[in-house]
Image (cartoon, rainbow, N blue to C red; front, side, top):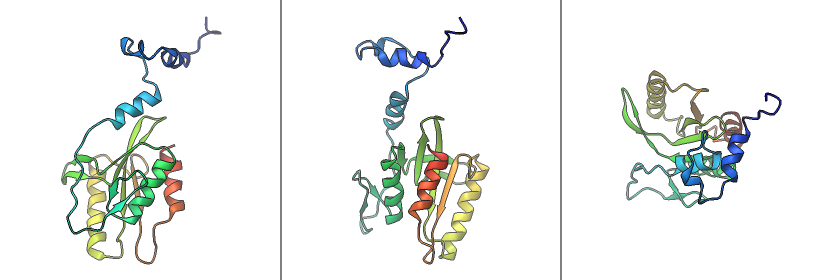
Length: 172
């Protein structure tokens, strides 16, 4: 029996079922495609935009707040990483925050918060960024574990290479 036992075949059995039979079966482990569909189908209300702000759109025609967020969103999309833009999360000590991205590592079935801090040359902005990172840490979100951070300033613009490196390291 042990020679023929292949636990990975359980996924294949469910996947091979006719689409009309799948609703009748409760899979032991939801196949990745179904898991992603379910994860992406969560409805939420993102943060609103002011009327007078510049409009930036991703390749998916999703409105974001900056050119840097376009780079991040388009890279996530190109590499087929599921994400939610400005998904609301409750953080003790802060309240509800709309993190820039909540991303899903499909293989680990683990969510990561991605915060991009784009104006680090502004001392008030940088101070707020440090405060936000501390609050995330106290709430159980740790850089390198379930929190991805990216930064830029006027003298150090966002690197598309660094974005892709973060995606490869944490989300693939």
